Every structure is written in C-alpha cells, then in structure tokens.
Length: 474
Image (cartoon, rainbow, N blue to C red; front, side, top):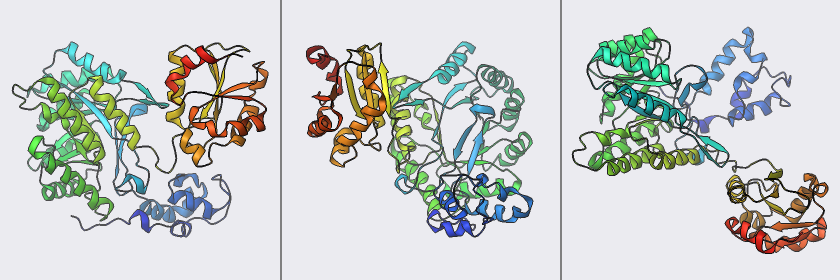
C-alpha cells in the first residue's frame, strides 16, 4: 500500500543490535556484556535506554539507528496525559504466537452531548469504576468517547467540560465538524484527546486542529483501504504526527468486510512492512446501535459484544462501545487479558505460604501449583467458604497440577522443599498436608522426602471445604 517499508522482526538478530552498541561491557544495564544486552533488546526484555553510555552525545548516531531498527511494525500512539494516559498500537507481529502483543486494546464507553447531565456523569463514573480481579490482574476500562449528536458547538463544549471534570480517563472527541471539534478542544485544551475523525473532505481543518493542540487524529475512510492509506499519507505530509486508522465497522452483512479490512491492514504492516498501514486501528462496535429500529436492546448489546470480541482478536487497538453492562463488558475484558499475556511465559504467582482466615496450630495445610489460574481458583474456593487454612504454593514453572505432574514440573522434591522453606512446621503442631487429587501419584514420594503424612484431597477445588469438614483431623 505504501512505498516506505520497515524491517520485519524476524530480520533482527543480536548481531544487528550489537554492531551499534558502545561494546564496552560496562554492565550499567544490569547484564554481563553488550552481546547479552543485545539479545535482551531483540527479545524485547529490556529497553534501549537502559544502556546509559548509548545516551551520550558521541553515540547519538548509533542510538538513532537502533531506534529506527527497533521501531515496531505498528506505530505507538499515546492518548491522554498523566498516569491515566493510554498507549495503543506498538505491535511487533501479526500473530500472538510469534511474539507477545503489546498495549492491550483500549476500550472506550461513549456519552453524547444530548444525554442529560446526570446520565453523562453516571456513565462516566461507571466506566471509571469498572473493575474486576482476574487471576491476579485488575481488569478495567480505558477511555470515554464524547460524541456530538446535537450539531451544537456549545452543547458539545459543555459536555466535554463536564466529562473532563468528572474523570481523568483519556477522551475521544467525536464529530466530523471542525468548528464543533475546536469547541470541544477548548473545553479541555491540554488533555490530548483522540480526535475522531478526519475524512477526505474535512482533513485539512482537522489536521490543523491536531497540530495546534498536539493531539492524535483518526483518519476515516470506511471500507476503502486505498483512500484510507492515501488520507493517512496526506495527514503525515501535512504535519500530523500521531494518526489512528478507522477502516470502518459494519454490522450484519458488512461484518465480513470489517474483519477483512482490519486483517489486510495489519498484514500489510507486519508482513509487508508498510508504514502507512502500520498505524493503530480503531474499531467502533457501537454502530450496532445505529438504526436499531425495533430490535430489542439485549440483542443489540449482544451484537455489539460479539463484534467487539471479534475486533479484539482481529487487531483492533482501540474500541468505542455504547453498552456498559457488566455481562457484556466482562467477557470482553477477560478475552483481552488472555490475548495480551506473554505466550512465552506461563501466568504464574509468587510461591510460598499463603494464609486464609485465622488458622491456628490445628488448621489444615494444603499445597497447590503456582499456575495463576489454579492458584486463584483454589484461593477463591477457600476464601469464599471462610475456611481457616494454610496453603503452600509450590514452584511448578507456571504449570497446572496434572500437567505439572506429567511434565515433572510438580515433583515430590519440589513439594518437600516448599514445605521446608515455607516455615509451616513452626506454625502447626501436626504433620499432615492435603494434596490435590490430581497429584495423588506422587503422594508416597512426598511422605518419604518430607516426613509429612499426605492426605489425598479432591480433584476439584470446589470440594475442598466439604473435604475439610468431613475428613480433616489434625
């Protein structure tokens, strides 16, 4: 789609990086030598700025070369300011199994300038307060989209001002009218919102606003990728630094075109090195609410929800939604979390002794693996039933119980070592430990190595409370 190409991730090697490093092995970065540092840079395990000598004036040229080499296939754009600012884009690869995805898809909930002030404030607060703990991570929403539906600059300005006073979340200002957009910017001039949108007809005025207020700008050409890329190039040449692409979001029969357009842009960026295609992508599943007619709200919410899920999987870097029910947002937030974990590293928790309730010297002792999903499931079942107990989390390199036993990640030696290291022997007077049912095959070895009697517990952690009531005797 464009003439300028980026080098692909697979073309980089530690040697490419090493050639431009100071090569003095100063260890200021925290690793032993420059080659080891170069390897970590290629694997994105460290930042280039960790090399302090590289930041000196005499290495400015090498630093510039390295920054260009390491530039991601999809440019990174920052929306908002302060600690709530949201980074989108910054992707290195097309497929998650190739490398860890960076910057989880930003989710914005909309308000309009024709909503009553109370409703606007309520929706903004609900967006900001959305929070759910999932395997040790707090899932939250990211932005608020303020849409002008009144075609009235004063109303839009007033709504933007109220939203900015209510939340520090980044904003997306939505109007195709440059005069109305400027009114919104005047209400929150230093908040660095994302401006939606520049089109083939209003691009110049929108570009001037983006440059004047130093904000990112959406280029929109629905279902016309050639026009979209041409528009992005025009905006870049005009001086707009941060651009987000809107290839169009369509419902029902247009959904196929939507997915195809997002996919083709991301493929062109990551596989073809096309810099103009390599800009963050904005999806707008809230189009499901447009022209809804007599369709029931729950059906519209479902349609919006599955569109948002599909776009999260298919490369959207930001989404604008209207529905804000927990049942529709939570699955999307969980899906996003799962996609944006590091496929090279199992999700694990810290090992050691965990205390639930107020256990005493006669309380039960259990062990489990440090696979996050296993641990939080077990912990939830113990906590929710108000069981007073000790739980020893064993190092299994992030493996679950059954796979850990099968793959020799959960061994009797590791369990025995964990018992000793936990200090549990000074907290209870008995020497009994409850093993997960799926680890029963190593119970005999654990007894031999640890000196503790192993009680084989249930295979499902939901049965732990009943098991303790029925069978636990110190």
